[in-house]
Image 1 (cartoon, one colour):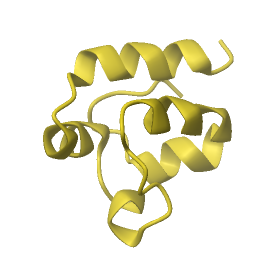
Image 2 (spheres, rainbow, N blue to C red):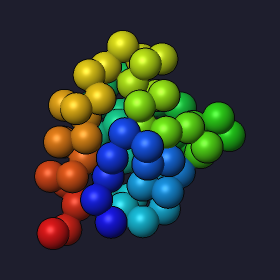
Image 3 (cartoon, one colour):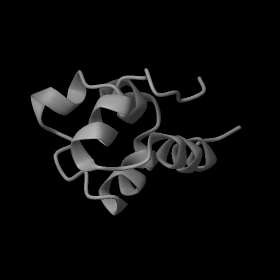
Image 4 (cartoon, one colour):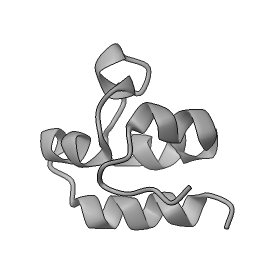
Length: 65
């Protein structure tokens, strides 16, 4: 599964728990909260002031090909 702007953070973490440090490195420390479980990558980037394209690139680099 490739990660996109529309991918739900909870789905990313369930399938690729190794991506948690990527989220944490940009200040997304609320990975376990209910809101983040249903929030898209784009939504979280908007809240945290992060460029979604850069985050998606880092996330996809962190998962097995």
